[in-house]
Amino acid sequence: MILKNIIIIILFIILFNIIDVENRRSKRERPKLRVWGRIDCRNRHVKNMQIGLYQYSALRLLVRLQKVPCYCEQYFDIKTIETLFPKSRPFLVLKYFYTDGRLGCDTKAILKLPHPYDNNPYKFGKSYHMGTINILKLFYEYKKCHRIKNRRWFKPRKSE
Image (cartoon, rainbow, N blue to C red):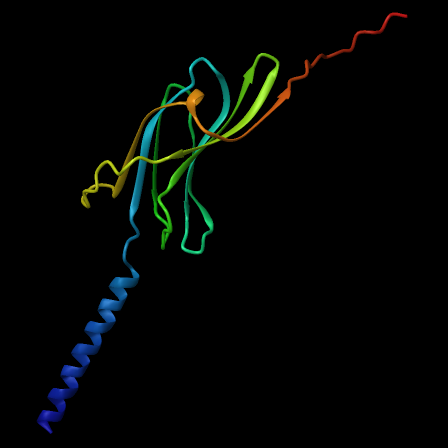
């Protein structure tokens, strides 16, 4: 009788330890990411600039991790969490609109991240320092330009 009770107690202890290990595994924190750098516009008139951090998941789906607005000659800092099962290294997408004389262009550029800067687990996970990004020397995924029309409050009459 005593031996049976001891065996039941040992089985309960083992069962609770297994449940505790499974709970810890499911509550495991996903790796954190931090990307920072500076945008250099080189006298280009830029509007609506946004920089986003994207990553492919295990199912080959493109996942946007974080998207922040940024401005010329200023620093950006993106802090986020990686996807659950990352398939590839994250990358940056820079979207903006600029005017060049009478042309207005919508652009989208893709930037690869360098190697992680610091992988100390006591800090904010993987950190990537982009340095200064010159928007004139980027690889553009697409660039659509159109002519900007002059907007007037009135139309002059045609003389006959």
